[in-house]
Amino acid sequence: MLSSLDVRQPAGTYRLVIDEEEIFGLSFLAYRRTATMLHIPAISIKSSRHQVVEVDPEELAAALDADALAYRTVEE
Image (cartoon, rainbow, N blue to C red; front, side, top):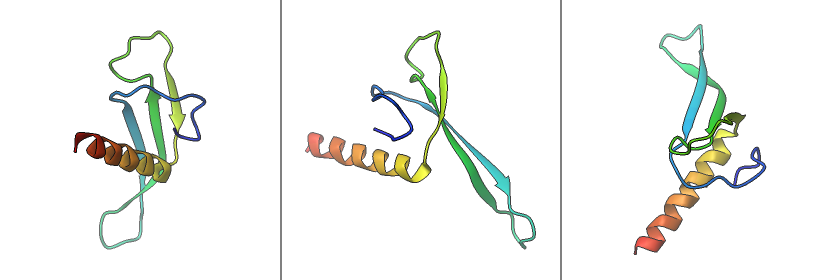
């Protein structure tokens, strides 16, 4: 569950869009993340209602790690 979502979302494949901007003035090419947006519902769910929610990338990474750990535990 992510704090930016009102309700739990079902398992599935979701579209995640990351906006970045170039960091100028460096001797190499680099980018800074400016936004992380999750499109709901999942790609496999047919719905006339679509929503884009900005999510915290660190919170999303922690949720994905916890999900992967839970999946590995079930598989063992």
